[in-house]
Length: 269
Image 1 (cartoon, rainbow, N blue to C red):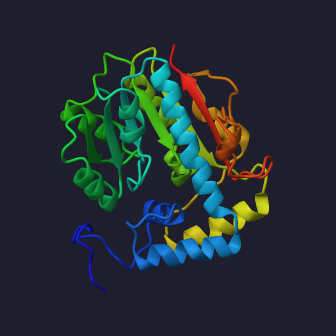
Image 2: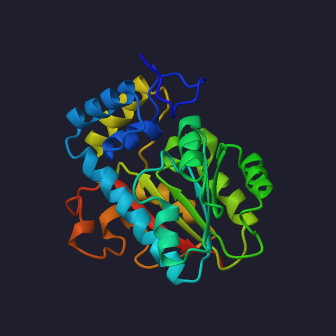
């Protein structure tokens, strides 16, 4: 198999990646055949899976716009994945070109591609880092000089915390990052849920473990709400992805009561 120019040499093209599978579901082009096959199997198990990906992307867009409206002028996107159309820097900088954005991801393909598209953007950058090691992640963020921890930060944890197992202590990892940013900062979290469709969640979770060897953990609403510990909730709280402040009918990619994802925004006070 020929290696695309955008793929780092040390990346295993025979091992599926959650970030690249998500890119495939969104119709992106920065994924390998193994990722497309894994995404296709997921679609066979749960046919509306692409709608979940679109719904999650739409939530990200709305959350970024909301934070910009609240005065946030810098974003830290952890678990950013493959940069596709409608990235955080595109959304935010279309509203204010001076907004700074730092992407962080564990997948070297995601980071390599982000750096390639950001080469001419001096207000956006990408680092390779692991949320399971938050102190190391924060150290790498500080090294860039792009994020000012004395000013409010828009923290984005979109479709990443369900990649952490209970043993990884996702609530504690969020808490470590929250402690590093000042009052007036915001967090946006989206997370796969077993709340509404436990059978479909179980099928996808088992398949992901078999294919990617990276567990995807569908959690209850209570477990996801716990990740907002220490944050003041922003209305309407933790809700289905399309129900978080939809702007128009085009945001309703999923049928109400059927979403496989929950999302919310909180403010640090």
